Image (cartoon, rainbow, N blue to C red; front, side, top):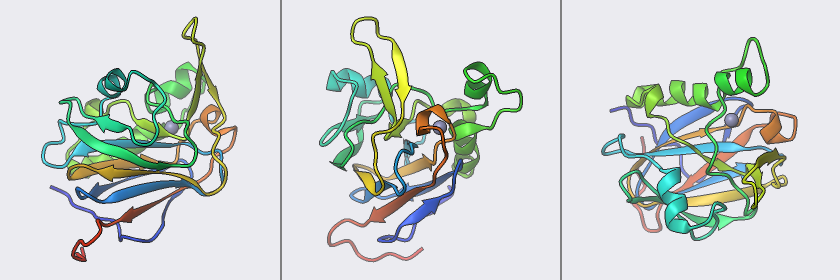
Length: 212
Ligand SMILES: [Zn+2]
């Protein structure tokens, strides 16, 4: 099994329209930062012990009885275990309904003839070393994505993110995880321009420093 722990305590940058994957230990906190504002970051998490277990939009929204999640909401897996909990959130508007943007999103919704591979394609490449295949990629937790829902008709509209420069959301891992994280590639989701995303991992209080 491929293992990669990001150096703790420092900010790592995900370039415009790209994505990364890394390991997160139980007890560690992942903070996803929007450095310039108005930029979405799709987040996936799989159990490191068995990557057939992954965050589940359906179970999480069912158990929360809400579609907008914030502190201290848990993100449940397809096996109803808690994989992550939201521990800090300066934006309080994120999406857990919509699929990662993909070449098919751009073909079907935008009519692009030579579409970008999107967050989905970026996840496929970043997660391949972990043995996670394309068909195993679920709905992502879309940090800062602003999906407005008409309560009567259920109609969805993707508005620009409410995040300002330096805004962030933090999650603590409840178990050892493989995480995928992107700087989203969909124009509509990001207020019409593509920006980078930053992230930081903080080790659990009292954890022994482990170098990789
Ligand atoms: Zn995207």
